[in-house]
Length: 118
Image (cartoon, rainbow, N blue to C red; front, side, top):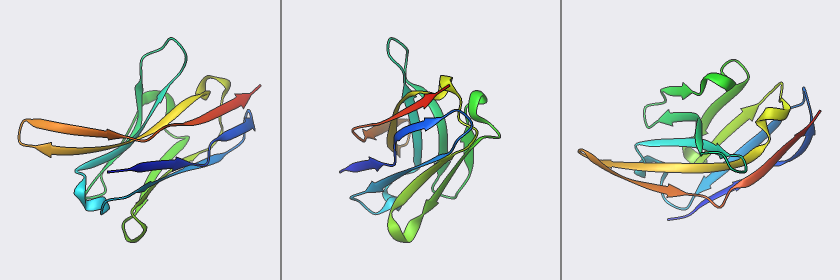
C-alpha cells in the first residue's frame, strides 16, 4: 500500500495550493481518506476527510477555505487550499483508513511541506 502526496510548496498568505494524493490500491479499498497536518512540536490534526460515499468533514480552522475531493477513476484525493494563512504552515499527510468492524488500519503518505509566508 502506498500513498504518495504532491503539490506542497511555498506560497504567500492569501494564496492557494492544491495537494494531491495518489493511492497504489484502488481508492475504494479505503473506507475514509483524509488529510492531516503536523507542525513542529504539535500533534497531528485532522484537516479534512472524505468517505467512500463522498461525505466530507473538515477541521474547524479550515472550514470555508479548504475543500477535499476525490477522483475515483484516478485513485486520487485532492485538497484545495484557498486563502492560506501563516498558521497553515505544516507538513501535510495523506491518510487512508480501512475499517474492520470496531478496528481499523491507517496508512500514511510520506508528507508534503506547505509553507505560507506572511
